[in-house]
Length: 365
Image (cartoon, rainbow, N blue to C red):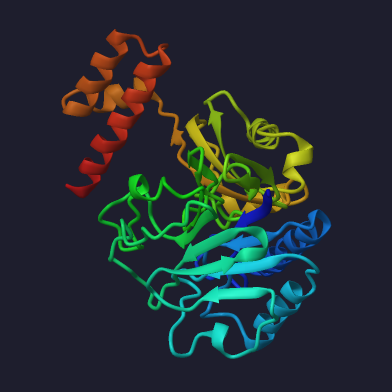
């Protein structure tokens, strides 16, 4: 028989985004959106009537969630009419003495691996065994290698684990990917970007990106599996994306030109729903002072969310500067770079970068 499943994890429900660059109402709204996406996953599992909902750790933030939040999760799971929910806890929802996993009774369709050593859940009705373990502390240096070897060849064998399959020295449960390839499917959590390591080993990624280090599409993995066949696919699910754009400024641009360049960094459809970090680079008119807070205020109706980073350099009056520094290294440097041809953008960028260093040294003296 074939088994259908959804593989998710790293939802981080309850996250307050206290360390995020975006704060206030945007942080509160993002927190709510994590819950909305969780409910959307539950709805899809019910609609598809999948056999298994596999959750590979960091379902919630133990530090910020309440008992009420956990009951909300429980009620969502209990609403599933045919789906078995299997959970391996990670480092953010680890199962310690005061774990929120232990404070409520879960419905019969939920199984949580409670130990930090591999154990198995045998599901005879779908001819499947799910192997997993849960963290019992915030870091785990012990590697998961060949501890699991008692696979039943007659059954579909699935591994559900939260750990690091890329770094053998990781503090986050190092996993030797070559020693788990014998599973029919290995459902991994911890890495927040969806990644297919092999045809049968995959990170689902977080269904919603959490910061600007998590660009691109996010979602869930859906699959159909039997002993001879595995078909898995990534399904985009994220409500918003974190997008980083670089905008080139030049010394001929006025203030309005700069604003237009920022607005035109992406389409209105994307600007209205995504979170942007725009990096301003290049050389600007020396008389134009960039007040980033003012620019953000002007552009707030053009973007759902925007933050700016100013990497521009002020344009210099090179002839005057060369004349005033004719007897020192600054004047000599300008003269030498002019000979190389400052109409060349690469030469000009090198000139301005060098002047910035030389002028800072001059100020120190």
